[in-house]
Length: 538
Image 1 (cartoon, rainbow, N blue to C red):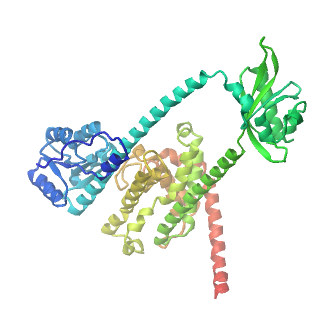
Image 2: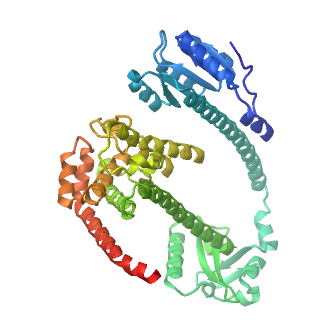
């Protein structure tokens, strides 16, 4: 039995983080069949991996706690402790370690159940050596990345705690400085300090106000502070709001306001306004503290514009990738645009239902509309001889065609993992690619999921995709009318489709029909233009 040694020590710097990324622990192989156990050990050892083995689950858990392997390969059916229980105990000890389950064709339900409980992958007996080695390689890489992330996050948390302690000490120090306000009044050139009476006449004007606005104290004292504000409805609304708050509270009111400098420049000033009271508590005027944030606001607007542009580029890139995959299937270009619009219409309708109100956030709808076009991205992995076959698929060809869900789901799962933990449109895209051919009654593929085990995103895309496929002319079928497509979808209620989603479809079927009619007219127009385009370039 080959062992690996002690677990990695606590990380203290980036050098140790890099060392963890390059390190590789042993692989723990568990199987009650000595022949399979030996084959696994030999195959992995010959390919440069350290291997430790166990003949059953309890021994495997003991070795796992002692040797700290980076990956576990285990049979599902074993005496004393089966693979599912072993998976649970491994994840309790260290959830960053991937667990690969080995199963026969007759035990696929347990394998799928294990995937939903956090298993990294499963392999079918007899084990294909190439698939095994590729899965082990990816699993070890996954483990290294998870451990790196965990320790890196811990370092960041320690740094945040240290900075928080420093900030607390700094705050105490500032609180003990009684001369803070006087220092601002005497010397600040970055903070405008002004005092006005209740008729808006300026009583005090510091050097900071002179620096920001360009007016000297002699020019402003006795003048109206309202001269600094542009005359527009937005400014008047802001001033009324601040005045109203001051009348009803004793604290400070803070707003970003538009103001005009002496040279005509438009400024954005972060203005904090509070009542000025005398020793008896009587309000004698209004104190205003202003900070010029024009550059910061402009930068924020530029960043916001950049973010919006990035979102547009991201959406366009995803759409272009999906369109490239669709082009291999020979379908019309409007399919993806229709699919996005159908999904958007269904989501808006579902949002009106109490059950889905909290689920159908703007972000959920945006992510689903964007990723819906990736549902058939896995078709890039289907051979041309099958994809372009005009005849009815045979059994073997159909099985190969069904694999497009696996190809697409795995590709998007890897992409989502590279982005990082948490939900994003790639995570939703993975669900759509994997499960959009699952059926409500469990007779779909690739996993035979039933009812609400099928992700909501995939159930929505399934209805939109089928409606579009039915109402679109394909090389092997005519285009159905809306009424014919509606009849098919209603007939499949509770069989292929989620009954509640079918009800939502019926609520918005007119919008579906309008989208289809518009696309049909556009397609006919484009078709009529093609001879003219060709003639222009001939």
